[in-house]
Amino acid sequence: MRCVFVAISMILALGWANTPGSNPVPPPPSVDNMPVVLPLPSVDNVPVVVPVPPKPGVEQYPDFDPPVPIAPLNGDTNIWQAPLLVVGPYPGLVLYHFCIWDGETKVAERITMLPFWLANEGTVGLTPGTSYRWSCRVQALGRWSAWFDPQWNFSLAFPCPPPTPLTPARGERINTLTPLLSVVPHAISARYDFHIEEEGGPLHLEHESRLPFWRVPEGAGYLHGGGSYRWSCRVHIGGWSRFTEPWDFTITDPGNIQGSAGSHLTVTCRAVPGLFRDRTVIEYTLPEAGDVAVTFYTVQGTRVKDVRLGRVPAGSHELTWNGTDEHGRGVARGVYIYRLKAGSDELISKLTKTD
Image 1 (cartoon, rainbow, N blue to C red):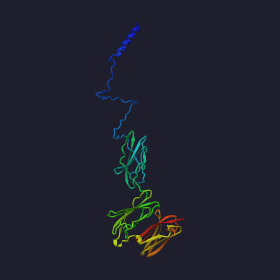
Image 2 (image 1 turned 180 degrees about the horizontal axis):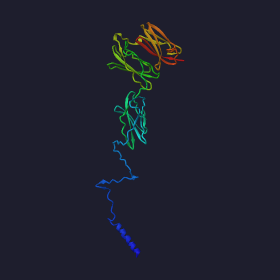
Image 3 (image 1 turned 180 degrees about the vertical axis):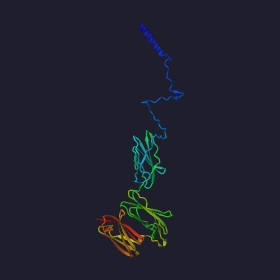
Image 4 (image 1 turned 90 degrees about the vertical axis):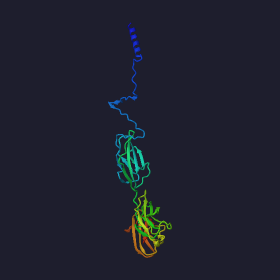
């Protein structure tokens, strides 16, 4: 009898549980079509923050400062052609975005995992003597910081000093349409770039040479009597130097102009092809009397010896050089430059001393 009672009780209980409406359905997950904000899980009662993804096309700036610039120093001008940009490092895994601007134009940039960048990597060459601006920002947690501001400036130094001009001298009046432009020679591998401009005129001549001098071609009609001109030169040794400060010269009146300085002065070296061991003889001819001086230089531009002959009469003459310097010491073997000047005329050429 007791077993029957227990069975009936269980049947009634199961029937009540499956009766519609007897087990209420949880409310829908929204009210008035608004999502229900569920509490975030927590660890040790500290809420877990879920990052919000940035909107497309909009930079998000997190709560960390931009990097601190270190080098090159602001306003630095003594920088080689590949400047090293350096900022203070950030802990953890971040990205550094370096940028260089010329005025308002971005000329170079790089994203790297290192807090420094050698700016010749992946960029076009920067121009010596030009001022540039640079800045950097960092990326962490998928977001970029602001650029450090104000931006810093630097300019590249020239790889070598400009040559020292010799002729025509500043303010000199010459009587030839084919002047000889010359500078003190640099290294034997150097290249020279000569420029001539007419003051107030359209003339602009340029000539690149392996020699530290250039004579304007005869009969070219580039220069004219009474004209005023400015000339300058730069040298290439691992890169171009800046130009020398322009020197001015004037061509004398047309009635006094000679076609070529070579018609006044002839200088030849007897040691053909210019090789000598103990001595060399320079022969020269003067159409008229004048003050004569001969200066010898190394190819690096160092003056070796200056021989001043004073007033020399017209005609053919000889000068012997035994390969010694101002103090009578023998010079080393190698290439040397000599410059012979007689009045307003001059000639520059090479000599080679052997053992």
